[in-house]
Image (tube, rainbow, N blue to C red; front, side):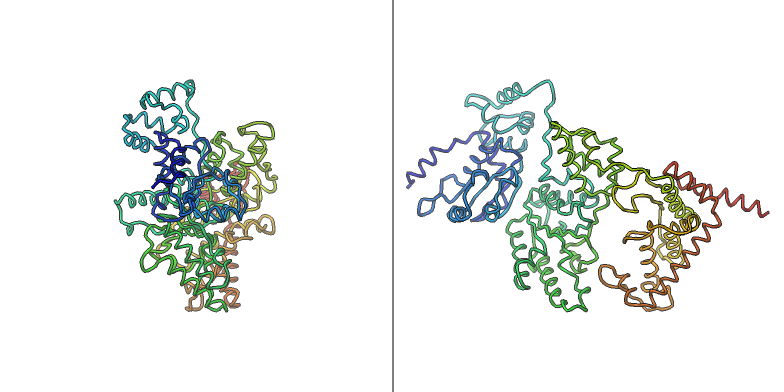
Length: 639
């Protein structure tokens, strides 16, 4: 028997119309992974609040068509928006204790209080209605509609559709009225991207990871349609890259593109729950949560924190790390499988990941996020400042060399702040220039020294491997931060032979040390440009010499060792004085060799460096031709 309260609830609800039917379909698709769950509290993000009331009405009709109540007459379904919830913590506990299923709409994270965030099980981005939804809604309500009209309706606000559609109007008439009201003298302005919740196809700079993600999204949709077996879908990846390069953005964008929920956690969050038993319990709960929401993307930040069992073998913590890694392996590859859950790990240090985590069925592979090239950086800036023409904005391209996506996003924020300060709603070139670090040119002395260093690499490289030298470049402007790989580069088309010999490695070390050698010849000492970080010439040469001695048996001993830890070659040298001495001798020998080559070709080095200091770039052919001319002149003089 229907209660009096249920009767009045039915009477007070707005009647469903075409717009609410479309909204109901969109809500149903967004929460499809939770429809069979008996209890949940979901927060659904809308791009703005224009259609908020229509979505609330649609959600109530979908979740609670019969106005269900408990034994005390309390509604067991709650549909509301975050700004309407003003209760204190205890009142929230009381309110939600009576609710079995709740949908909370919001447009910005700031609308959700800390107390409310604790109650929410998942946050979902609303999948906006497409032309297909409008087709289906028209069919459900017995209305005729064309493809062109549904395509147009999918660009309109549901609120406007609801206002324009009267009982005696067809959808064709509805579209005509909407088009008549819309300004006809200019095309509609495309909606700005939701920067807080991007899709993978909107992002740049992810290289192979983006290709992988887009293919995965297509596979997931095929699996959902029953066209593909889960066994044929990749199970996950580890995304590696420096801080600020979008490792945490990628899983969220991947989930948005796939149209599935994102569950995010980290080893640090698991560890924060307490001792080993608590940590393992928290780890398993995260995987259970992802399985309950499937299909889903499970993002695990800084996955290298889980540990590597080989690294900790001699440590007092080995047994602890072994149990953590073993439990993680069990979660990644359970006996019953993990159908519907894609796991994306992120790390700054892929060398610290246990090898077993990368086997098939687990993470499977590591994909490195590449350094952003000029096109990537412009695309990222264009994403954050869509109103700005950045195609030919050279100052940004120069100053943003080696920047991360996070730094470009901050630049966009700073530019918008400057625009607001002057009362402008859109950002101009001047605003962007004002937000960037000032450009500073090298002094003549600095530019010449930099040119000597790079030409040293080019001349020794062209002497030892003439077919591989591509070009040599130096930057015109001082970098906005210290980073020697930003100020100059000599590019080689390096193709190591399949059966690489000791002589090939020796040539490589000589080429790496030739920039330092050239500085010593012309200035009496070298600068710090050759060392200082793991990507420097000197560090690469030192590690390569270590590998020759210990890994490839090119030294006096046939005993090999590949080392352990995040810096295996360095660890080998630290524990072996004899190895350090052997490496020192190799480096000195190749340094002397490079200096001998450069001294014999000093006129070429000087003339090419003078040209490079003025032009900032020389082709490999120019350098090689200069060397040939020099050889001819030297040969003629000897004759």
